Image (cartoon, rainbow, N blue to C red; front, side, top):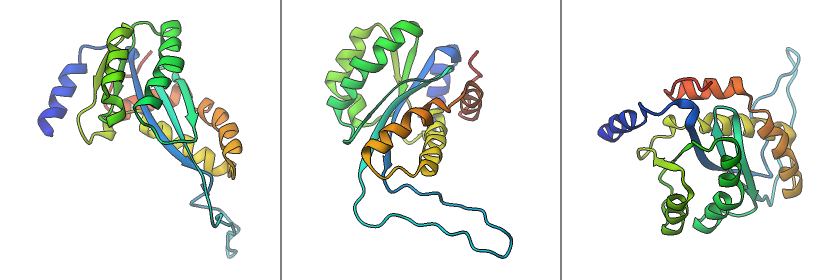
Length: 192
């Protein structure tokens, strides 16, 4: 695995960081709660966690130097068909508009490597690369998901509709400054 990581560093060394666009998906739930709270000294912080049934929403998104470029949420898990639809209807049209020289980077999830996705990407005109196996630390979108989930915990959405509504402001909260830090933390130069 160390050899894969060395090869990855060499493969992206010649690509300007502002061209890199990292794709990923993350699940969020309707039972998200804050994990920490503050209270007055000597008093206990009170809160509740929902019991019983909860629902899951999957967010598919891409992070470039500008922040989140294209995102989609769906009340289902990601499979090849969902990922292809995201690429076809959301991300690729947006990239053609704002970043036609993008190099797409994604992990090795089976949905990312399906034959249909490969055919779509091969015909898209965009270069693409796969991260080395087991390397979330090389993907700057991971800390972006962490920030989004923190904001969703604060929003305490308890229905799928509330969760979808809270996603827009949470994704918009990823600033250019955040993105520069996420790229730097993952070992890439700071995009302009």
